[in-house]
Every structure is written in structure tokens, then in C-alpha cells.
Image 1 (cartoon, helix red, strand yellow):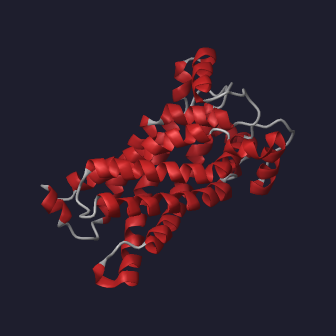
Image 2 (cartoon, one colour):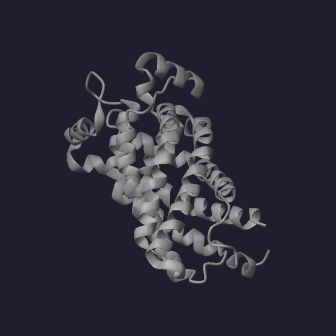
Amino acid sequence: MDNDDYDALPVEWPVATHMLAGAAAGVMEHAAMYPIDCVKTQMQSIQTVHYSGLRDAFLTITKKEGAHRLLRGMSAMVVGAGPAHAMYFACYEKVKHSLTLKINGKKFKNSSIANGTAAAVSTLFHDIVMNPADVIKQRMQMYGSTYPTCRSCMINTYKTEGLKAFYRSFPTQFIMNVPFQMVHFIVYELSQEHINQERVYNPLSHILSGGVAGGAAAFVTNPLDVCRTLLNTQQHNSKGTVHGLRQAVAMVYRTDGLRTFFRGVTARMLYQMPSTAISWSVYEFFKYILYG
């Protein structure tokens, strides 16, 4: 299959193609960037070690807890990322296709309204699957975490806090991920309009567009990500459980003012830029390979 064949493919591809390509993209994306994600999680904590920067955090974690700490919780992420991204990309492509046709007719020109709406809808399905995996992953990643395995973390969390613990941060995560994914997909599609106008399979264009989109979305939504980390891990200096976004925002602000909301922003951008670049390049590659 050459680039001309790829460009000539029907606009709406089989759902199975999107799901398989999306699952591969999700696992590859998260696995490749997992050590940076671990550093970001610890930097966002409002209770544990305070790091002067990304380099200091990386060196301190590996020195005090060993390099293996950077990979703790990866199995939970892999189990969640595959099906979550399969649903995510399949839903996005289906809704985008339908809305673009309604807005622009058969011309099928790029529509930021369609892209943003499709991103918001697909986020719901992604987060329902991914939220429990995120809770386990982040508890395994925290400084001084004593859980020996992801399974023991899941069982202990369920016994002590109940099923609600796995979805305590869901409203915050959803509120964060909707603007994140809207910015992400809109910027990606606009970037493709400029550097890949023919919409052919072009790995470099997918990498560049994905990186720019991921960096922009990560910066805008970092304050909500700090609150999500607090709700997931319950790592704080006060007694009791933190319930809901409002309480999390108040506690984060009391810690060190507004700048607390941007803890780990550099790590998050350094994680998201290559992460989304990998995701889009793998996703488009597998679409290119699978559809035949």
C-alpha cells in the first residue's frame, strides 16, 4: 500500500481498525513515557519530598528508592490504556466524521467544532475505563509507597476505601480531560491542515502535530491535574479524606498559593509532548498497516 492508496481510503474506516490502532497507540504511548509520568506524579504531591526541578526529582527518586521505582505501577497502566484508547479513538473518529458531514456537507472540510465535540464525547468513554487504573498507578508511584504489587494495591484500596475510591477523582479527571482533549485534537487537526494538507500518511507530520498539541493541552490543564493527583493518592498534610474538586482546589491553594497548581508542569509537558507524538504516529501507522 503506497501513500496514494492511503490518501484514497474512505473517510469513515471500519471501527475495528480504529480500535486496534488506538489500543496499540495507547499502550506504546504510556509505556514509553512511564518514567517521566512517575516523576510528574511525585512532583505534584503536596505532602512528600519537594524537588527543585525535573532533574533533581529524577536523581532523588533513583538515588533514594532505586531506578525500579520509575516503573512501579506500569502493569495497571497497560491493562487500562489498551481498551481505554481503543474506545477513545474509535469514538472520536465516528463522532468527528458524523458532525463534520453535518456541518460542512460532503466537502468534508476540517471543522474545529466537530473535532472539539468529538474529543469531549470520546473522553467520557476513555475516563470510565482509565480512572481505576490511574488510581492504582499513582498510588504505586508515590514516594514511599509500600504496596508490593498493583494487585495488592487494588485489593487494599477496595477493602479500606471501597469501590468509590477508584472513581473519587472521576469528576475532576473528566473536567480536566475534556478541555485537554479538546485543545489536543483541535490543535492537532489545525496543525495537520497546515503541514499535511493532502492528509496522506506522513510520519513526521503526525509526530510534529502531536507534540505541539500535547504540549499546549498539558500546560492549560495542569492545575486540574494537580487536584486529580491529590484526589487519587490522598497524599496531604491534613487528617481525613479529600472529597471532590472544590475541597482539592482549596487544599492545593493553601499549600503554597497559586504556584502550587503548576507543580510538575514542566514534567507534564515533557511527558505529554513526546507522548502524544508517539500516540499519533503509532495510531496512524497501524491504520496504514491494518486497513487493506
